Length: 332
Ligand SMILES: NC(=O)c1ccc[n+]([C@@H]2O[C@H](COP(=O)([O-])OP(=O)(O)OC[C@H]3O[C@@H](n4cnc5c(N)ncnc54)[C@H](O)[C@@H]3O)[C@@H](O)[C@H]2O)c1
Image (tube, rainbow, N blue to C red):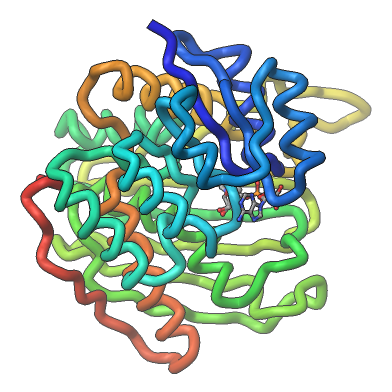
């Protein structure tokens, strides 16, 4: 069985998903590509033997497309995911699910009305072997209860469209999701603390995002989008009887000319290459008949709600409580 996939958004992430789907995922084929820039869609479609569509809605409706990846900019996600739900087609939507909680709740309303899960949100870190091993260590009980999760999220240079709010809602949203998934509980309160602004950044960067989990654990996130030296994600889970720390998958350590070290990639794709591959395979397996995989629309909503509280705290300088809607039984 081969699932025919349609891709909307043929930029950095869409291009990566197309390449991985065509080379490293079993049971799937890229059948269609659409992008606001027709030349981008044509380039990827040509390279992968797919059909280019000028219009995303037509791609969703086309009979040749059985499942859809949404990798267009954040503000386009809601309408495209709602379109997939109206067509009853499974959709893997890049994070964030929506730019506001109201948008996410609209998607939850549509999916709940259908009565089955068709939406997976692209929080690929859940599939990263390092994070999975960290969660395995916590869930084994050998380390005792989790107390603190330290996170570092650094990008070499921020994108031209980055904003102070986006440091939380577009970048640290990955750590927000990882914290909820790791501890299996919601975030209760967010406090954003800012040091002086880096001279490399035209916005409030870096930021420290402090989260109190509902069960009592604390998560600190250093989000720094202009660290200059490369892409660097770190994490250490501190438990009652030990810790679990991520080891970056750098392959080799070089010793040369009196120094020892390893390189940092320019962006996230090499660091999370394996996570993206496993995420896509899990999604295809779930579309082919397995149970839903990865982050649900509820997870997407909850992460956006935490990000909204974080942005409120950034603006006021005071802690902000996270207030979630009632969780539909579909997501239990
Ligand atoms: N999971 C991750 O690790 C990760 C990393 C980076 C970006 N993202 C997310 O992926 C999405 C895409 O990010 P990117 O870095 O690839 O951006 P990008 O700008 O490189 O690509 C976006 C593409 O979408 C196209 N586009 C714009 N509006 C469109 C529309 N209405 N319909 C169809 N295509 C449209 C653009 O022409 C462009 O080719 C964003 O939502 C972003 O937050 C996720």
